[in-house]
Amino acid sequence: MDIINAIILGIIQGLTEFLPVSSSGHLEIGKAILGDQSVPEESLLFTVVLHFATALSTIVVFRKDILELIKGALQFKWNDDLQFVAKIVISMIPAVIVGLFFEEQLEALFGGNILLVGSMLIITAALLFFADKAKDTNKKVSFTNAFVIGISQAIAMLPGISRSGATISTSVLLGNDKTKAARFSFLMVVPLIFGKIAKDILSGDLTYDSTHFTSLSIGFIAAFIAGLFACTWMIALVKKSKLTYFAVYCAIVGLIAILFSILNS
Image: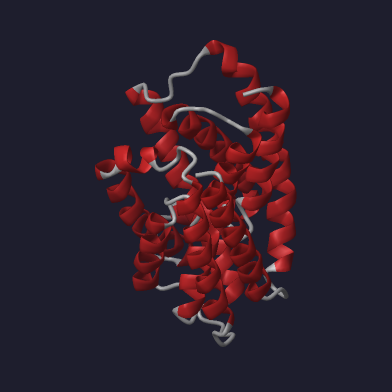
C-alpha cells in the first residue's frame, strides 16, 4: 500500500469511526476502489492500526471524563463512576466472546467482500431509521442495557455494521438519552480496542513486513488527526442532529457498494 492510499484510508477511518456510518465498511470499500490487494491478515492489520489511532483520539477528547472515572473508581465506593466503569466491563463481554471463539472467521470477512459490506450498511441504515423514531428521554444506561448494547457492539464487528450506529441506536431504542448513549458508545470501545491490540502483540498476530512500516505510520497519524476532528464534531452534532440523515447516507452507500460488487463480479 502506498503512502497516498494510506493517508486516504486513515482519513476515512478517522472520520467514520465516530459517525454512525461504519468505519470498517468504508475501509473495505476504500480498499476495493483503491485497488488494495492485501490478503485478509494484512488488511486486518491495517484496520487494527487505524482503529488504535482513533482509540487514542477518543482518549484525548474524553480525557477529562476518563480521569474523573478513574478518580471515582479508585475511591472503591459504589458511586456513579465505579458503576459506569462496571457497565463498560459488562458491555465488553459479548465482543470478547466473539473475538476469542470466532476470530479466524471474522478476519476472513475483511478481504474486500463488498457485497457483504453493502448489505450490512443497509441494516445499519434501518437501525438508525428506527432509532430516530424513539422519544427523547433523560434515562441513563442501566446494567442490563449495557449488556444488550454490548451484543450490538459484537455484531458490529462485521464490516458494514456501524459500531457507533449499532450501539447508539440500540441504546436509544432501549429508551436512553441520546447524548448519554453517544458518550457510552464512544467510551465503551476504548478498552476493547486496547485489549485486542495487546492480545495480538502478545500472540504475534500483528506481524508485518518492515517495508509497510511507513504506510502504517502515516495511516495511523492521518486517522488520529481526523479522529480528533470527527469525535469533537460528533459530540456537538449528536445533540441536535437526526439519525435519519445518517440512515439515508448508509442506505445510499450500501446500494452503491452492492451495485459495485455485482458489476465487478
